[in-house]
Structure formats: structure tokens, C-alpha cells
Image (cartoon, rainbow, N blue to C red; front, side, top):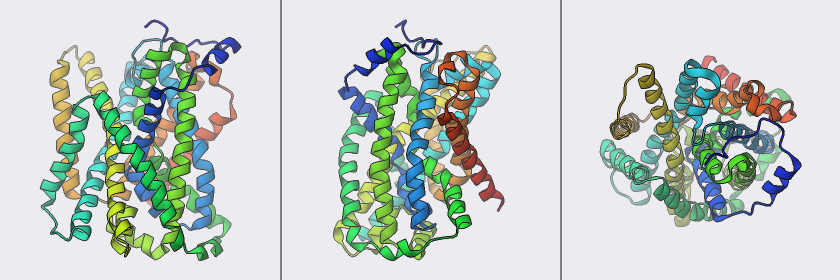
Length: 429
């Protein structure tokens, strides 16, 4: 289609009216659920541990700021992709289009490094969760880690190899029960809430420090940027110059869904456990639901908790794997073009498939600290790509000029800077 070009002039009232009349479709629902599924994974299941250890009241402020942070940052990234003059351009192509070949290579590399560690995290998370379920709930011996991790990774990657349409169908099948069970589990834990946590009010310095140092994990937990590129490309194909405004609506609904379900779940988990128990869960390198299952007397929680964790990791793996392979393919193709070499897509896809499997498998066997990987590897680059790069593009790229001069841009930049400084502080302290 030739109508993918976004007008460099401000959107007219007629165009706004035309966009507003676009009905909400089944495709929009599918994308909303897919984006939700991309975010609800290991980060969500570990968020109550990191966020909860700081106390109840800092968690309240986190719940207030994470919605605007998530929506505005993902909206900016989608607008960046939608603004391309070239039909079918994904984020790696748009970066090169606007910033040149050299900068394009560098940012594409950062994009890959922002997502790839998360895929590794899911390999570790799914292996630990299933192993804990086999040992603690089924009462069986722990299987050899290299076999268990290999089987689980093959299962997750097989869905991706089957194609994007199949992946979206599987994601949709997984998300409905996941949302229902997550909400039910949050309600189920209410009778066990320890309300004395509300009486613990930290000093202003400790309060703000806790929020600041938790921002990287918050960003990771609500991050669905790996799917934004293909999401935006699909909307450009269908809606042309109205793609960006259509994306705004879908992203707004996705954010509301995420904040509503996830933060309720986080509050419920945090109020059900003591700070000492949260510290023990962190030390055990298990998702919060697996920890609850192991210490809860109810068979319901004991079996349902790990199942939620497994489904959440599966659903989130798909979107992140898609983004990681997109980034890696972009890196290799750009390098090949610079060297004036050509490799068939078939050979390239096979190489990426092999690379992804063996590296995810290797890290899953090693079993590093998941929260440590989130803080040290994923956080800073995600913040740079998701929060800072689109803001820089809005400031520099003529096609994004209509989005300049907004207070929301300052808010996104400040959030990104706070995230990066918090990670750097954590690494040196």
C-alpha cells in the first residue's frame, strides 16, 4: 500500500474525526491481548518481590506512575515506527532511515541487547518454575536440568517456528485463562492480607529511594516494546496514515488492562507475605507464585500458582522472542549489506534459530540470578530504547514534529533517566 506515509504536518480535524470513527475490531482485541501477554511474564511474577520489599506505601506511588510511564513510552515508540515513509519498515529499518547507516547499526544492536537478555531470563524462569512444580507439588525427583530446560525451550520455540499467525492464536488462547486466574488468585489471597504493613511509613528519603531503585524492575515488568515494531507495521498496512492514532487507542487499553490486573495482583501478593518471606523468595530465585505454592497449605494455591507462572512465561516469551530475532536479523543484514554480501533468508533464519536455542539453553543450565539479570542486563538498554530514543527522534525527525513541545515528553525522558541512574547506582553500590 502507498498510504503508509505519515504526514509531517499536524493532523487535521477531519483526519482526527475519521480516526475516531474507526470501530474496535477483533484484530484490535487480538493485538491488545498479545501486547498484554508480552508484558505479563517473568517480570510480573518477580515484581512483587522487588517492589514489595520496600514496603506498602512506596508501592502505592509506583502504581500511580507506572500507568503513564508505560503508555507514553510505548506510544512514542509506536509513533516512531509508524512515521516511516517506507511501507513495511520495522524498527531496525526506521532507525537506519532516520539516523543513517552507522547510527542505525548501533541502535539496532542496542535494540537486540534490550530484548535478548529477557529471552534468556525466560529460559531460566520456565526451567526453575517447572522444576519446582515437579519437586514440590508432584512429589517427584528433580529431573536433569539440561534435559528439562532443553525440552521446555524447544516447546516454546516451536510455537514461534510455526509462524506469527499460529503464535497469535496460541497467545490468545493462553491470555484469557491467565487473566481470569490472575484476578481470582488476587482475590483469593485477600483473607490472608497482613494490614499491619500499612502502619509502616518510611522516611521521605527512604520512600523516594525505594521508588527510584525499583523503577527499572517496574519498566521491565510492564514492557511490551518487543512486539511494538511488528504491531505498528501491521497497523500501517491496515490503517495507513491513521495507524499511529489507532495504535494510541490499542496501547491505552493495553496499559489500563496491565495496570489494573497486575498491580492488584502485586498488592495482593505483597500484603500476603512479610518482608522476610519476600527476601527468602528472592534468594530462592523463584517466581512469587511458586514461592506462595510451596509455603501455602491450600492445594488450590499449591497447584494453580505454578501453572499461572508457566502460562505467563510462555505468553511473554513469544513477543520477546519475536523482537529478539527481528533485532538479530537486522544486525546481520545491515552488516552483510555493508560488506556487499548476500545470504538467503532461509539460511539466516536457520542460523538465528540455532543461536537462540543454544544460548537460551546454556543460560538455563547455568541458572544465574533472574533479578540480577533484569537489573544488570535488560534494564538500562530497555530504558534507553523505549524511553529516550523515541524522544530524541521526536526532537530531531521532521516527520515527528507534530509531537514536539509536550509535557508528556519531559515526563518520559525523566522516567528513562531515573531508570538508568538507578541501575548504575545499583551496580556500583
